[in-house]
Amino acid sequence: MHDWQYFFNHDRSNLNQATYRIFEPEWKAEILHWFSQKNVDKRQKEDFIQALIGFDDGCGDFYRYRAYFLAAEALSQFPECSLGDAIVEQVLKWSYAYFRQDKSDWQILPKPLVKTARKTLELTDRKRVIAAFVHLIHTTESRTVLRLAAEKLGKLDPGNKSAIAALMLLIQQNNSHLGTAIRSLEKIGYGNETVITTLIQFIKITPWAVIHSLGQIGCGNETAIAALIKFIKMKPDEITNEWLMLEDIYEGAIKALGNIAYGNQIAIATLIDFIQRYKDDLICSDAAKALWDIDPGNAIALNILVQILETTENTSLLDMSVRYLMVIDPGNKAVITILTERIKTTENEFFRCKAALCLGKFDSGNRVAITTLSKILETAEEEWVYFHAADILAPTNDYQQQIIKAMWKMVNLKDERTSLDALFILLEIDSNNQQAFNTLIRLLNTTKHESILTSAAYHLQQFNLSIKLETKKLNELIAVFIKLIQTYQDLAVKENENGDLFPSEWLSYESGLLDIADNLTSVIQKEHLPQVVITLKDYLSEQFYKNNSYRYEAVFKIIWHCAENLTYPDFYKAWHN
Picture 1 (cartoon, rainbow, N blue to C red):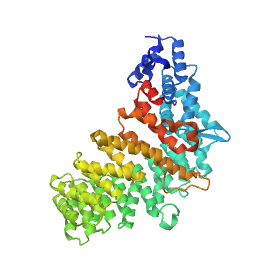
Picture 2: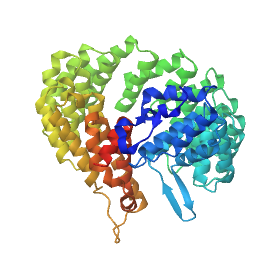
Picture 3: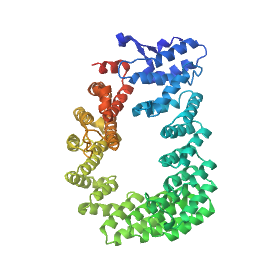
Picture 4: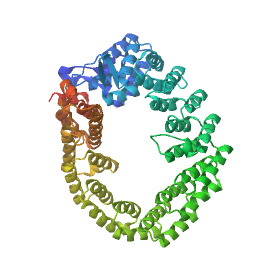
């Protein structure tokens, strides 16, 4: 079979008789194999590539993009293609997220297009992509494009000198791109001594970013280890940073040291000394965990965490120490004994609850923890107690009725966030609870808070509850999301006197609407897709993009999902309905 039209024979006048195997996932491997065959005429391959990149789908370009990306992937099997350079250049341009049409016009590209373009660059002709990125690095006037291109090039071609040099240049310029350039260099500079030395020069200017990067790229590197040790030994008044609390900076340095200094005796001694200096501070537990990481079995690390449980009145320190002990010594009997004793002897109700929660996590099914939380659940005044107690008690069937009663009490408080969390615990206990379903749908129909819908969709997806919803209820939920896509306004945003949005406010709109788009795509089933296309496609007009680009982006994301899950003929019919 040498004729490419077996895979792709476009006939818009008779879609049902045309052939669109290029859009069917199960045919992709066969198509790429066809391009690799030596006995297929080169002219056939060239014609197929031309047909793919020249495809006009007549329905918003969604399938045009898919055809073009397939052509780009085919270059990996057909690198001698005469159109290869132009194809890679176009895919690279789509991957920027935005590009300049001329000196006064930036075009912002929809995120699904950008994401797919970036993935395709990893699948197409690698040599062409590397050459294109190198050319871009040396010609772009945009620092942002330079940073992104260098980061991507460094991933495609580890150790690429152009990529590292570009990011080093951005860092040394010490401008507004410093933090992001450091994070980009972190992704491609693993073990590079020059990179590590350069980063250390900026440790006092932007400590958190540099420290985090050293912890990612400096494994076993003596220069990086020495810099972190020096930082940890600094006195508080030697460290000044207007953005970060001292504890945050120390914590980052300690965790970074725990990542890279395995077996280093100076690092071990430094952490032991730090523990002695800050043994009553929350950060002490972080130091103990880092000490254990670089010196497994270290008795000082284990003992200090256990001692914290015996003496601390700080519930955060108690909780963190138990979390670390669950990792380094999950069977420690002393932990169970100490927590049990503190539950019995403390007069502080809040501490008793926290200790019981910690014991229940450390020793699943512990009767003291369960009995204590059961009693607290009857008298608790704080909402968080109900939810944390329910989490520990839920696996034991004996307390489910008590949990259900407590959760309905939370629902009836009328706080939407609390109600939503309680409803999903009720549905987790009994996924067929119609009263909980009805209350949930009513909440989603009336809420004005986008975050409520975000959480709702996440839980529906997590528990696969959308499939268990009755058809009518699922349709109601989908209608809620579609209506919100059409009407959503951020109530915290005020328009200026011209009715325009400021840039930061635009981002608020975009973020909220993209979350709603994710919510919708997580619950819609295949049978809903054509109607979603019909309902929302008019929001993708050029005029609408100019007036409401934030909503355009969300709708594009939804319809991109539809295009990925509908055949081309079905999508085309819905688009032109």
